[in-house]
Length: 473
Ligand code: BGP
Image (tube, rainbow, N blue to C red):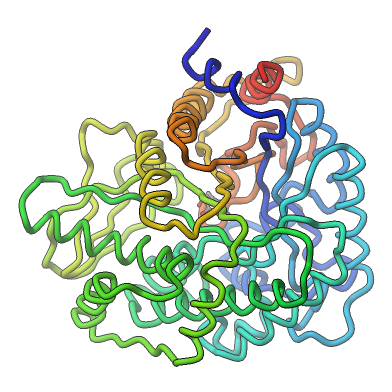
């Protein structure tokens, strides 16, 4: 028996095996039943590279996807609610009853199939009307988010596991550093860090309200953690790694679980802000909210894909997003902070994402050692973007590299769990192939293949692998 299976055999029966999705990446139907625009609709149309319709047509095909999940041994699904299906203009007025019904129907089908829904309230899809007023940089968005979240808690009583916001760093990074998400700014460090802070405050306010109201479910948020390692053990590279880590990870982990930014974290963040002529506004009330929420998160969603190796870099900031899978074209060099370099001992995907399973073990140990307020952890995303080859409808799609990726990461996760880290579940990114924000439709992650023209689903070897795994328990 493999080392992984030995660990799987020891898992409790309630261990969560899920597939992850996000509304805008799977639903399609962006104009159906009164849905309002998100920050993406006009932008993608203007850009003309790919359309979010019909994506994986989950809006119509969710029953089929849920039954596939069930058939292949999963017991949970991660979905997000599209804010503008419920409140088309973002502002909380009278809800769009068709949108509300859609999510009730979805949750009902999940629960009837023994697939527990884990629901995110904001997964990269701000309502266009609020985006136009500054998105998370406008503090009014915080209040609107609290209102929208409050509505969802009282309406969707059947949901027991809530995540407020998905990957604050990825949203801020893609919007304001990499420029691949609207409004497409590059190295606008002030906006990136301010948006993250404001999102943390929004999250905290929602958690505090949820607890005050005494809801019985569980609540938390999701961070993607990218552990940073210095290329060389010299002082400069080590400092670069610390700066990059503060920027990518530590600022957010502190804000979530310490309820403040520690002195050491702020020294690193201030160094980054100063080097980029940027400032950060933190109000007294913000800190009170963060502090109150820090101990009240019931669950934490950890997304992990890759690590980053950095060396000291003092040149001009430069970035190139590898969005088409042409290996070796990605660049990230951040003035005064660090430059991502390729460690030749670490393999990469076609999109230049490092394949470094040990990073998830290091991350889990770090969180459990440094952030005792972090309680139950779910791996809410982990998986591999791959150019799957479809041969014929009769043949199972061979995605062995994805299986190898998941196998190795899962092993590291369960090793950390065996050593006491409280991991309660694993969601593969993604359940079915879906639309990838800045990469379109060729970067597939699903354990079920989607023919985007016909919307037919086909089985991949990774789905069969999951089914065997679930039988092991
Ligand atoms: C995470 C997001 C997902 C998903 C995934 C893969 O950051 O939460 O929405 O997209 O990464 O990323 P990509 O699609 O860019 O390859």
